[in-house]
Length: 384
Ligand SMILES: Cc1ncc(COP(=O)(O)O)c(C=O)c1O
Image (cartoon, rainbow, N blue to C red; front, top):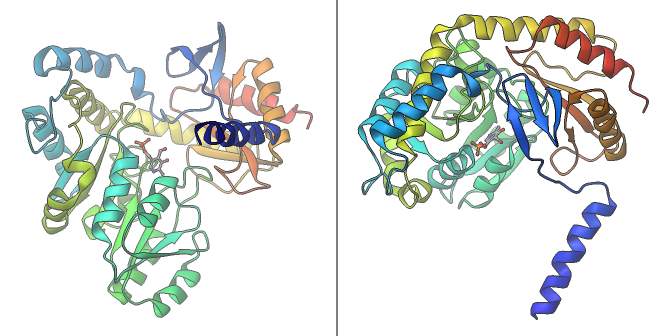
């Protein structure tokens, strides 16, 4: 039995390798928000989700260090035992104030928060309606819930409307900014459709928080919807805020319920207090240093203008996809760019649908105009 099991595991990895789909973590030796050092070589970085350069902002690093000295490195327990400290309360209060939601619960990751949101809130009699391109954590959350799940065509309001007619007791789940395509749904239209059918709207805004909205309050406020009008909001601290961890924000009734029944919350060690101090500083900078969002948005515009003739996906956000098709082409393009000093990871199935392997470019406020021009020049020179 043991040998058979090991042989099966070995075979599955060997098959992935043969299909050019093997994933391998690289070890980053240094990162400063713009440049990344890997294997002793320095590259201009266009991968990663540090859209506002906050992961290396000196004030955030100092807050992390001070936070460790003042509040401790570890929370020492589940939030309901000894894992909620003063700094956690400061963080949840700040999030409530910034985002305009009544109550907030902290989670160790966005993956855990999404699992909790769908598993806990969806009952057996519900149907979870998810966008076709939903993140793995949402799909798994839905699969592990008691509810049934249906997927609607990506950002297609009419397809969703049809499903809502068939399954009136539904909950609609989407993302503010899709992680691999960089596009956004029409949240105003989605919200009004959900209101019309009197069904809850749940939003994963991992890639919208910090970036969208006047003070970075996210995709819903940027489209004229209050975060408080959502049934539940998930966002994490590991993207634009540059740290790690996540939260669910909603009205009191919803959060009270998740606090009682959310196993990912109850049976998991609370976030590190030092990390909470860093996230708090990062939120402060995110809200007040408007230049970060302004520069990011001007970099996005510049990139799209210079690269208008390339096979760009339709996106107005920091995530810009160049579709190449096969995994071989994507890997080949990524390694040519690497040789010319640009770090850009190829994204292949199963992360994206078969036939849509791509370069997923992420832009940040730390890129200069010359960096963007250099990237476009190198993309144009790729021989595929
Ligand atoms: C859309 C989306 N949701 C959820 C997650 C999971 O968040 P975390 O990395 O904090 O676990 C990610 C990140 O990979 C994401 O892109």
